[in-house]
Image 1 (tube, one colour):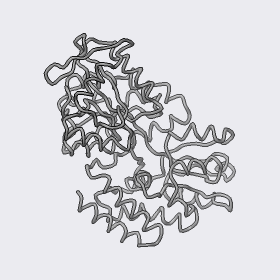
Image 2 (image 1 turned 90 degrees about the vertical axis):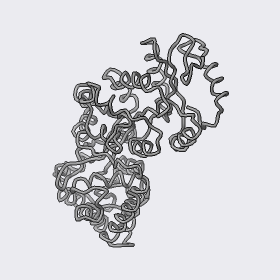
Image 3 (image 1 turned 120 degrees about the vertical axis):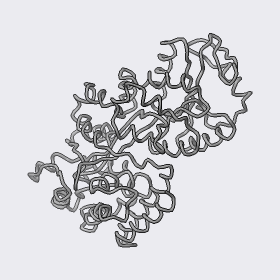
Image 4 (image 1 turned 60 degrees about the vertical axis):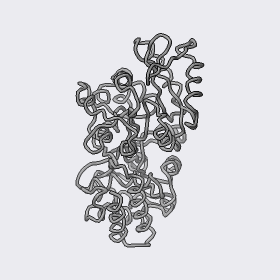
Length: 414
């Protein structure tokens, strides 16, 4: 991807003509509305925002391009913060890529913008679709239609310090009551029992969601008893000093820093922190369990989806998608990017996740992770939730009033 989609069609075509393809130069020709390589392959363009994993993605594309004689995929980098803007510009100017990788929570928004192709028939007709976890698959749905496929997945769990729990003679908590009890008993002058992120950003919504869903609530009913119970749980632990007031400005990275320095006995966080914790404090033993439940065990879905745009050669793009999402490719891709596969069969069968004490703990968590939304208005919905969290935890408003105001804001945009 490029860092801005401001090239004219002529300069873009010139770029294609000068781009190396499969180790050698490739001259492209325009054929109707499609672009073909000199050897007759349909050329399609993928936009992504990967940095550390870009080299592995390029290797995968080379492998696909050499595996068949019909489609050639090339990729361009677009920064994560710019991709929606550039897609809007590209859509207006008729200069969209064929395939994009987006945050799972942005799928519905991009579909509502008219950027994406409806691939419902292909998704429902593909015999491999039944192997995908339901929540990642549902994150691609907008108004009952599929506008993409899940590519990578992750979720949140409860990290706990094993040494601290053993010293206190406690088992990791399974319920909200056990969570409050453990947080209380493990809080000392030098540490807090629990850490969650309540910073005014998507991270706070992300961390609040498992508690909201566990209580039986959802974003469409923020003025419910269930939502009140979820937010009241967090406020109660903050008010009782089991959590530090700086959770209001703490990111998930900040939580990991405090946990690794043993200033937290427990934290809510994701699998991307595992390696960081091991490097920061090799002597610390920690475990991972599902986030304690109220009515049901729950988590929240993160990760990326992959979508075909409205201007693409859908058949050629779908050929690549099904290749990339096959077990042998998606296993390697998700391992390299530090995510989990959105496929149940790969998640259960791969030794990579099964044989690692930390990663295998997330397998059952992935199975209960709920997608945020899906909603094309998610940024505004998330902002309403973030404000309610901040208002209630700072005593600006009572929990019920903060949530009622958030519910009204959600109703306005839905």
